[in-house]
Image 1: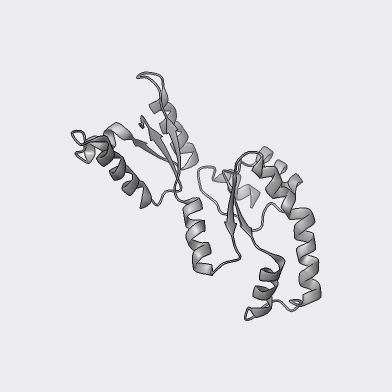
Image 2: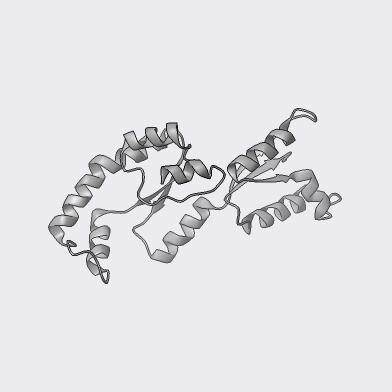
Length: 183
């Protein structure tokens, strides 16, 4: 997995169940790439147990005793990963004790899109840097002034312009957007 990530640095990846321990976090970020964010499905032991026991075609060791041991391992080894990433503001906490469709909606909102803004004077290098960042990290660069021109919104009031941008961003499929010259 690590070799594939190194060979394709501009791709986006969603890695399920990794890292499981803090030392894996630091190794991964030092030798492969920085995690942009971490989806944390916060689920009680009771809810997890009910779901595991209720799933069809589960594992052969899906029993109360084994589930308790798995949750204990999760608490002692995996939760420190969340604490590690929380200090960098990268954790997107999802309440996973609810209906699966509600969990899906929150997950989608947590992932799509993430927006960073670049603001600076003309000739500051932001467009050049923005294009290079987008190419390297699979972001999409949106120049706000070009967006207004393309959408014929230059003569509209600020609220109309902002609502149009929000609508555009709400249907965007690219996971990360670099927004230049907004507001």
